[in-house]
Amino acid sequence: MDSSKTTYRPDDNPGKFSSPDGESGAGLAKSPVAGFDTPGSEPVSTTFLEPPPATGPILAGYPPLKRGISPNVFWLILSGSVMLVFLLVPILALVARSFTDGALGAFLSAPSVVEALQLSLITTAITVALAVVLGTPLAYLLARYRFPGYGFIDTFLDLPIVLPPAVAGIALLLTLGRRGWAGQWLDRQFGITIGFTTLAVVLAQLFVAAPFYIKAAKAGFESVDRNLETIALSLGSRSFRTFWKITVPLSLPALLGGIVMTWARALGEFGATIMFAGSFEGQTQTMPLAIYASFDSAGGLNEAVTLSVILIVVSFAVLLIFKGLSRFGTRAWSRLEQVNLLGKSQETPG
Figure 1 (spheres, one colour):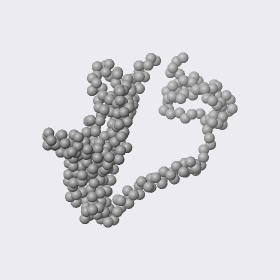
Figure 2: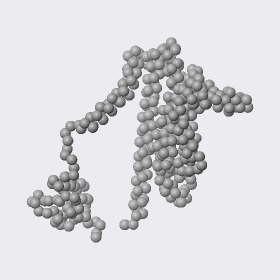
Figure 3: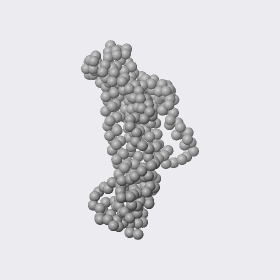
Figure 4: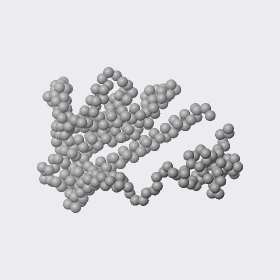
């Protein structure tokens, strides 16, 4: 049978197709694809053909169209609206308060606000960079290999996510503080003090935020088809090149999602930071600590409102940027998938 000829047969459908004059459609022909010839018909030149009009039997399995909103959809909209209002109204109230009372203009250029914002942006950027550099090999190891103690390590990585931040701060203080297990050795041998410094801020953020990236990267690496890596290696590509050219692009949406979660968690970190690094203005006082400290300062609530609005604006802007990068990564992933499918279709014998 010639594959370029396509004939529409009503017998292929569950219902019976009848022509307007009541005769059977067995002798009718239709071309579902533009440019294909069918017996007894002229070549079709249109790019789209609507299906033939069907009568009652062919639509018997479909429910009738309903007018209005069903009760299930109504309750979904109602409950979803309640949650949306609960999440949105406090943010809008905070922003409105900053403009109506003039707090945003009065404290926007205050030294404490500027220093807290700069410190938060710098420390979170360093935290994200360390999480990516140090967490990617661990995530790839967990995604590609199974070894004794795998379950323990995988579960242990979830522990900082569920631990109260204050517990994380105490743990870091007992380990890296001046009298901690490793901290006293570093102080005695090299004169290095970590606790209550800017480095302590970074380490506190890294401890509580890095697991978010590791778990997301692990899931992304596990979703990559390993046959693609095997083919690249068999063609002479080196391991690192295969990882960078194939594995990373295919798992890029998950990696970017992990970076966003890590940055957001580091930016909002409070408990571990105040326990391990303290709250020293210009040195360890990040935005969350500055908001808490502003209640006891001369600015009071107005300064706290200013810091909160700035934190909201910065967070929203960074999230928009990362979401744009994530969509770019998704499009790259889709293009690679299309290339993969095209290659497989060409390898299939006709």
